[in-house]
Length: 162
Image (cartoon, rainbow, N blue to C red; front, side, top):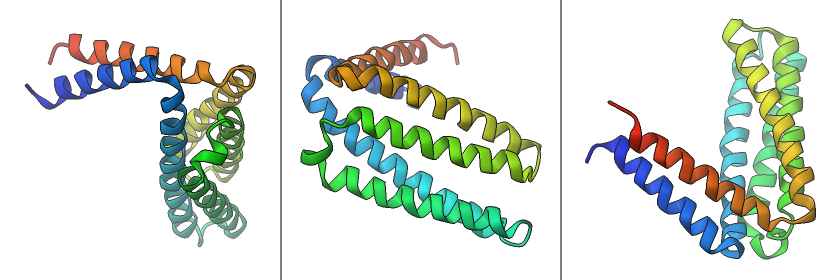
């Protein structure tokens, strides 16, 4: 079995786990969001260092956003008991951080690829806030939505012709 098919099968299995055990999944989501924020923060800090010569203020803003992202990522990973019921808040925080970072990228206009990725990050930030509004009333629905999404993605990967 090749790597893509293995990834598709793993995605389906993870989706089923999210559907069957939604409460456990909320803790898993907290860890995933934490790890994602840490990597996002590291890359944003690195981006700030690379654009330090071009635009000093945007470099500083990127580095501050990156450091805040890393701090929140660590909080989401190590304080699961406290934050597991705040899934909606997590999406708000991630959404606002993504929107601020995207606006900074759009204003700085380093290159065409930077503008394109900034627009995508902006759209994802807006979707994250919309998901936060939906999940604020019932955070358990996030696990169900993610489970269904993972199953659909896994089936799509398995059915793709290589």
